[in-house]
Length: 87
Image (tube, rainbow, N blue to C red; front, side):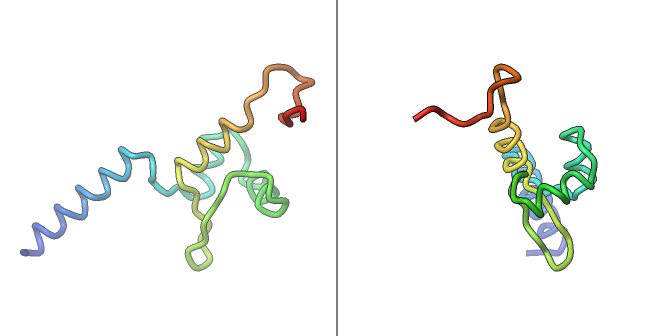
């Protein structure tokens, strides 16, 4: 396969992942998407209360699908709704 075909295939694979919602975002992009500060995401990582994340070396990255799943789990119907289900 020629280098050009290889590059086109990589772009095609990347585009397919983006379409599937599996793109990785850095802290800033994730914070912007959620309307939060980067500092809040850092605190969420410390407490384990935020979206799942991955570390690539020193870089913290979030999968778009993980962020959206976490955001869906934060849905509430009233201010008194704690998100916990009754037993």
